[in-house]
Length: 355
Ligand code: NAD
Ligand code: DAU
Image (cartoon, rainbow, N blue to C red; front, side, top):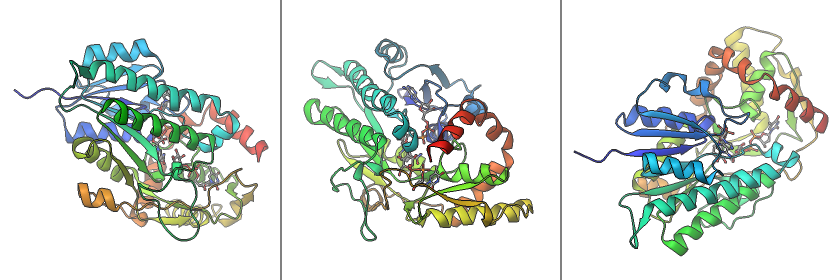
């Protein structure tokens, strides 16, 4: 009989983590998934309602920085893989309050690495097949001018407390490979979009505001460029890295979908008006507001390494992905209402005054 594979997914109640858990349980029904999540404002168990009864899925509420808890999870489940999504993920919040970004994104990652090392390294050997996958971001590379792409060799040059915390974590993960030969991979992907994204990020925020006829706050001139990746394409890439990525390597993951922010906002308006017939959803809702401090101008990923080595390619182009995404939010208004209660209202009010 083959060994049972268990995967410790941290931050699995968030946007990408919950999509990843759905993806893995669909593709490998025999895998055991342990989801360790602190359930911050960004974590929501409703994202995983349909898998909560699956006997191969376990949820543990807790902090990745809690050594005893992480150690206990390793003792009980002996995970083969750790996929570390848990993070404070929003750039604007890191400008408002950097401390928690450093505690979770840097120190939390170090705790996970230490516990994994303790359990995976015995008698001068790493347990067979184990791997730690750090989910990082293209933001660690900084900002591009109008030309060129980030490759895995681009020097790190983060500009926000968020991206600085992610870059620090990347260095620490790499140091466990260099020093201890710990089996690791680091993935750096561009902006994700799709179901279950918290409505503080550009696409779901614009959808939610437009549906409520609220202003659509575009930072500065709106000509900043992001490279949009449909979340399911990202999950498939992480799975490939987890199974086949060369140890110690970094893989960039991007969607070949570079768009200006203002284009995205206008596209959302156009789609929502078509889908709802609501004429109050129009471009007069757009408001150019004060720019984000330290705002990176352009991100663009060169994904040729993962394309060549692991034969991954994004399958959902932006035109299809954005229709799927807007339709998902329209069909899940109750989810949006639920996550935009309480803390969100205070946050949104604070952000509004901040700008
Ligand atoms: P998210 O904010 O939607 O979810 C983060 C999850 O982590 C939440 O469920 C939250 O409760 C949990 N969490 C936070 N602190 C924790 C802690 N101390 N212990 C345990 N759980 C904790 O984030 P996301 O957009 O899904 O991003 C997931 C990962 O992917 C992050 O590491 C982020 O840096 C990276 N990433 C995101 C994007 C993107 O476009 N969203 C792009 C590149 C990289
Ligand atoms: O590039 C990967 C990163 O993408 C991830 O590492 C982060 O976790 C994720 O949050 C995302 O960061 P961004 O800062 O690019 O995402 P955000 O959705 O906050 O903003 C996208 C762009 O839209 C950015 O140029 C800022 C702009 N923006 C954002 C908001 C929320 C606006 O113009 N108005 C807004 O209200």
